[in-house]
Amino acid sequence: MGFLDCIYQVIFLAGSKYITPVNFVRLGIAKALNSTIMGRARFNGNWTIEDPQELERLLDEIIDCLASPRFGLFYAFSRVFGREVAITIGNKGQFVVPPGVEVDD
Image 1: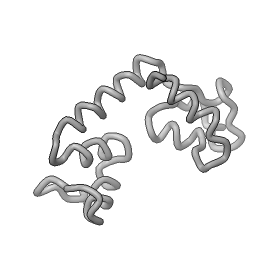
Image 2: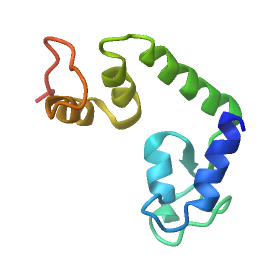
Image 3: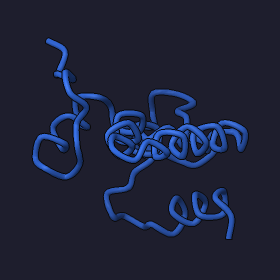
């Protein structure tokens, strides 16, 4: 099964496990078509999956991040969830935060 097949299965088979269209947009694997995504989101009505090229680019970025043996998880989490979340999780001991990296005030 390819990467895109996995994305489609997560989106359409996840049910209501708190993986909502808004969360897909936040993760970068979907895009909002209008603001009604916050209410009764309908696929291809007010949200849709990113283009396959964009998903492949995101995958390549994450793979590149993970190529760093010491700080790879930090970089990957930063790319997907944002720097502040990555620092918070890293500071809880889940992975190593690069020296000198701090939350922006």
